Length: 277
Image (cartoon, helix red, strand yellow):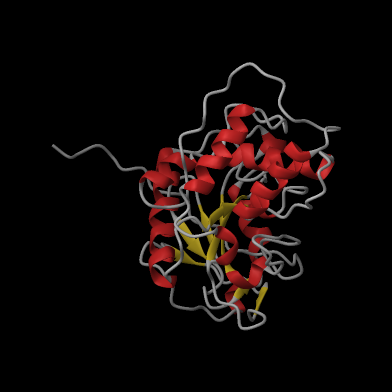
């Protein structure tokens, strides 16, 4: 008897004008399709990729997201797009500078586009219902990132979210992204979050040595934050970004004991200080 019929994946939408662009050989063996984007340039200052930045597309559907990332005039792109069914599309060669991070900062570097590989994950995001990430998609992201880390000899902890490098502007890939699953396969940095317990915590309006110590710890990990000793709005944004990534059970911008202990555990488990990698 014939087996059950296999559902064929939908053909990928090819944006107008892409057919005229020169194609290229994909950098990764897990890539299923190449759709060239015109939106890229050379990496600046002699920088080479030493980090991966993960995004969600934040658009209603994959077709619109691919069109935006691969169409001339949008001024946005990424090296890879990972679809919900696990297919991976490469749009910019890894040797080139894709335009995915925008104004961003990590460990003192403010040209994140020049030192990173950008991966866009198809997900509608917070503005469009923010669905869970399918298991097949996460497996594809993990396999892709493992290859990137090996090819470029990147430190495993230099796998970050867009919200980490641009906390005042971005939420992606968000608190639903299963960073712990990637870390279990050697992608990214993770410790089990400290349990949430009753307590006030540090919040907007606080000041003093405890706030300064928090800001210094976040800066040591890599976040762009001013060491002022004042728990201002930018500090709350960085704490919120940290929680989205490392303590997603509660994302409120308040540095409670769980947040502080999780941050210290991450710092203690770094192979080298993040700011010097």
